[in-house]
Image 1: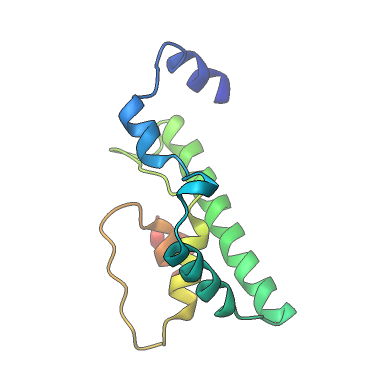
Image 2 (image 1 turned 120 degrees about the vertical axis):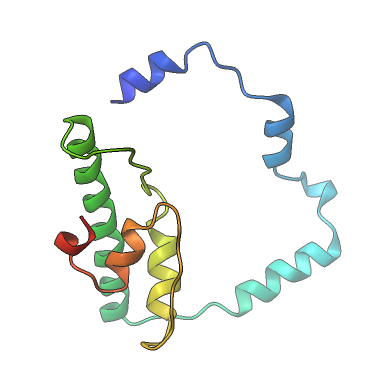
Length: 127
């Protein structure tokens, strides 16, 4: 799959505007306010137990495995329509949805297979 992607995008050049939009500021450009904000965020980090860390890891792994299987089914023609995958974003759904209370609602409209898995639906229900 990677070889196919590499061949497909071989002639593509990134837009200078897009590249500059995502460029990291140099050390000289970092303001005291930005540095203060980063330090504030670091101070708010929460340590989790090994049991919680394992649960979060398993949830992210389930999401990745599920999306990989959906991709395989799509490439084999076993899924009708289009598939928009969530690979690489598993930590988003895991982090947010596992922090929610049981009675909280999650609304997603796009690339939401993993959200449903993180909220507790079975992979069979999601498919």
